[in-house]
Length: 337
Ligand SMILES: [Cu+2]
Image (cartoon, rainbow, N blue to C red):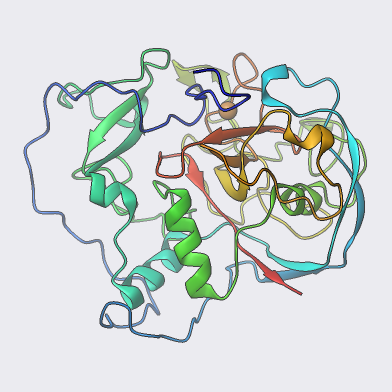
């Protein structure tokens, strides 16, 4: 079925559908909860109305509405639908300067007794290079052998059983689905950005530049984001400081005060994904197609490398099914002005 622009894009963030059953599951171990996050509320009954205490690690950035040039005419992957570049307007909003951290997500799951999609399914996608050498066999999407379907991988166990969040409470939460992101935003009194809002914020007021800080990927040799350095998928030199995720406020923010808009983790947006819908859609506060199969992701991740995935740019986009999760996908909320 070749529905316009909704074919799965397994290269960068794999989808749940279409992966063969795992051959061997690791022995089931009691999930060991990592230490409670500092300041996280005590467990409260499921569904209890708890006033949200969410304050993004980097604070909120109030952005006035305005017009900007969205998209890019010469994207490296025409099927992604980055183009055409077009004038789009958005109303004002406040955006989290940082992606939601593990600590923030723990406060939410504690307060709401929330169970993520990855926990319900019992597995999520982990990058093979992060698994111990003696890890039991795992299944992969056919085109992307570096993604492994790992039982009991979830936000608390980013590399599966035995892994935890020590030293990573200020890293972005990963292994969260679109539905998980929406649930967090509801609790936090915000919502996911539309793709237009996300790109407006990520561009930081610059026009026609690929990166949140300008034209050069490494201006004067300086690393400005967390992506794959070296040879994908065999060797990440971590020249930028990080092999996997990095703290949400690592690197310099853009001129709007956003950290890590590109690189680190893909960020879920509110819109359904389509490669061509925006060609004719209204350009005043666009919200994407009314229906779809995949939701928009923006920003690229620590796994993007120029050799196969030049998506660490503000106009780059991809889609994934709303229940999918992986070790390189998170989100950042916004709030209406
Ligand atoms: Cu990528």
